[in-house]
Length: 146
Image 1 (cartoon, rainbow, N blue to C red):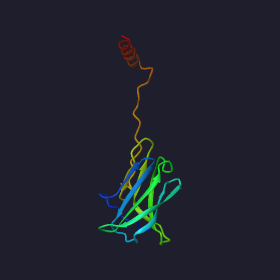
Image 2 (cartoon, rainbow, N blue to C red; image 1 turned 45 degrees about the vertical axis):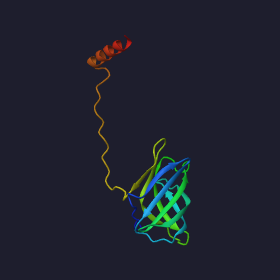
Image 3 (tube, rainbow, N blue to C red; image 1 turned 180 degrees about the horizontal axis):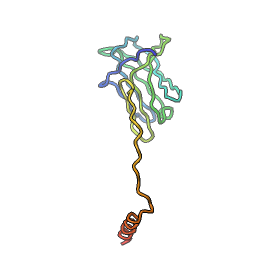
Image 4 (tube, helix red, strand yellow; image 1 turned 90 degrees about the vertical axis):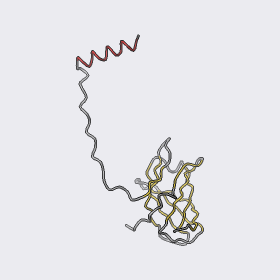
């Protein structure tokens, strides 16, 4: 797998703008020619969405900006890759965009976490046939009816 391009945490962002998702990436270690390019989002299901991007020179590296239709980036974590118009190869970016229904869009810069938390152990719930619990439910229901 090719090395991923690091993203500046401070000067990169993703947010909703009307019916679009705007992604702005500051890639300090990348040297692409200014002009037009492409930004690609791909998710774990294999879906890919490509949009034209504007590549501009930054103080360090380049800035890449693109607008994606919000309807195309539904409920997923999207990996990012950038490509200059003159390049043939996609350059993976060390950031992801998180899009959820009725949620703000989030840019997750940095490498993907390698640790996974263990599944939570469900608590033992008391039986519904417990006489004390049944009596408590009746008392609460009686007070709510007053």
